[in-house]
Length: 485
Ligand code: AMP
Ligand code: MG
Image (cartoon, rainbow, N blue to C red):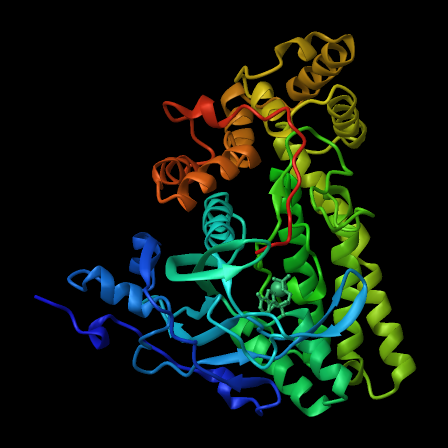
């Protein structure tokens, strides 16, 4: 039996259209020539309550490139602004369209967004399109992040458009379907603040709270309450990035969500050798968004967020600044407490001892000086021997190891309790950059076998699976990522 497009289970309730039309432009995806499905996330579609069985693959492709829009969809491109590498610019969905807000069977609301769906009024002269390789890269890394337990947008499908996209050379075009708690960004608030539109700002605060933080709906000052919640969520997020060695690489304010999800997987990458200055980006020569600078960048972005809320924090501007500064200044100590807690778990420390921070920093310093792999060092501590074993024979490490074991003994926890805590936070597999690139090169030629195999392993990043070792060895080649997406 063939299924009708309308039987799929879409359940749209498009609340963003309740804002005035300065916040978005109603626009449909630009149709593409010859769409075909490259990858489809069946598990996610089930979680969303969508059922595509019995629908032909060509009909699914027509749906996920935007040639056919589901019933109830109200496509729009959102307006926003943002500080890009410190410079304020007006932006917006230049190549993305939210087709609607879907409510899942568990009553959670998700934006369904096409990325690469053609130009919009916010395209600033660019083509509005996306290339297959980078869309598959977003697919695999966002799904890996989800499996790592890190808040992130998800990827539902990648469809090849059958059209070429011109970058330095003609490349196969694609549309990614992104699923997000919402697409409200720090930049969305900046867009309204830059226009002095306090009435929509107030509405956006209320809207963000009802969508993401309903438990603070009754707070006396909603702007202050929202600011506090967003700071909490962003600290959680950055801590989890630091835990697994993830480097976002483009932490502009337009890429920081109010929901606390990781968004916009462009040139992001995972750190191999431990080095705080690791950045990977070919355009970020100053290392503004390097691994070690991520908390600093988040703090800076949150200060920009607080600035947009000033008129809602207090009617007296000086008073508002005083309140906002106090909240923003609390970031550093909150972050440091959370970081120490996370690092304690990574090395199996229960309870707190005054010397913990020193022991953690000693380990990191050793990793840096001996060019040890970040992920695999924690695997080594969990008893899993990998890669350059020789460096673990260095006296500095042996001395540290003894101090570490003494500290663990003092906590009086069993070996299995220590190990299970470590195993719950230390991934044994991360998306290694060189392997991602290799699998994407194959995928661009039409062979998805390596891509799918890697995806399968990345689904269980905290468990040992047979054949895992081939995904664990870092490359010794320097890695750079580019913005050409
Ligand atoms: P990103 O670096 O992906 O966060 O994008 C920054 C801004 O550039 C956003 O407003 C995007 O919509 C826009 N943008 C990126 N690539 C394109 C493209 N190919 N066509 C139109 N707009 C784009
Ligand atoms: Mg962006």
